[in-house]
Length: 463
Image 1: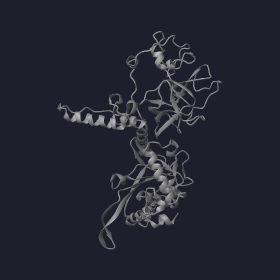
Image 2: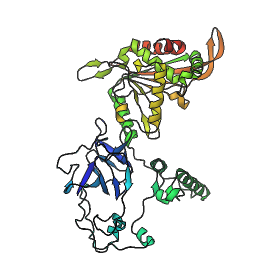
Image 3: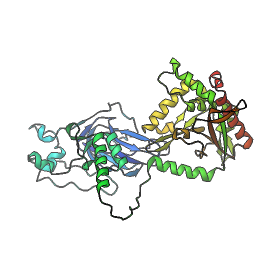
Image 4: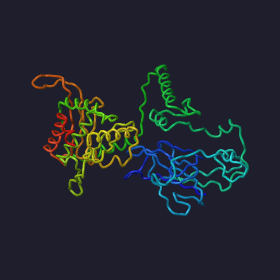
């Protein structure tokens, strides 16, 4: 038998650290190869880490909510068929790959039976319950400062002592049972699950339990007499996606000289086309919106001004033009702003683009976008109009030359054919890297995008 340490792997290009969000296993669980051990949050998304080996979980080395560096041991698993302790090595002494997706096993896990119930053959080591109950068992040594897990005793305790259920449950506080989405909700709302009254099956804390706990706390706060003392300031740790966004925006504003252009236009024909396309049975089940037509317009305009999709290589003093259009779409999520990328958007027709945008944004809002799906974008579009904002000057994503903000689409007074009439209008905000493009190129690009939205039949004909 050997205790293997699973170290935090680099699940994305250049990842240096990640936050442990939720453990999917507990000490004593028996796991198969590729069974999900833990959910982590990187600088780009939530990622599930599968186990690179099969065995029994002996220690969780990192608490939920803690941020650790890549290479840090996070869990110790006892693996059969090898002697001594290991560090991600197999029983034959060779290094095992510990990256995500390693191994042919199923993504399943099951609870290990306590040794006390295994029978009288004495062939298996005692579970954690039996070890805790045995008065003659020596105390386990504390983990070393490096996070390594100490080896388990070679011999089992001589005679486990059965305790009544009440006594056994008092040996250590039980971890509240809750599904990962409920744990996420509690974490975001600052709720300690141990304080929530559980009403779910087998004592599980449900989403309704968490929301009810919040409502009760709010009612209690409202009923409490005011002390007249101003509230104290709070400090909120900035981690994961939000910290990555903050760092990216600092780089954006300091590395690239940025200029923003605005253009307000009549998009009544775009809104009529959106209504017609929604009735087309080919588009059943996909979202059709002004953003779809704007994304299509951007793709077409990039074909005429490819410099807008270039990146600046300062070391070589060169512009690097991509082979195609890789369209980033900014998506607001509970964990922060992310920008997943539609690969080869220039090769997609309107229906294919609609499907790609729908899948991309849905996955992003669930926090399940893979890290590699948020790299390599050549241009970004952000729909600030979905928040009711009329116009804005967006900041560039580092490494890109342009980003387009689509403002709210609403009926406003507009001079049409010599008369003031209510028309559907919007304002586009284009920010560019002035090292790469000049005002004429940026203005021409923005005019091209506006032309498609003013006469959107081109978005369908040019496919």
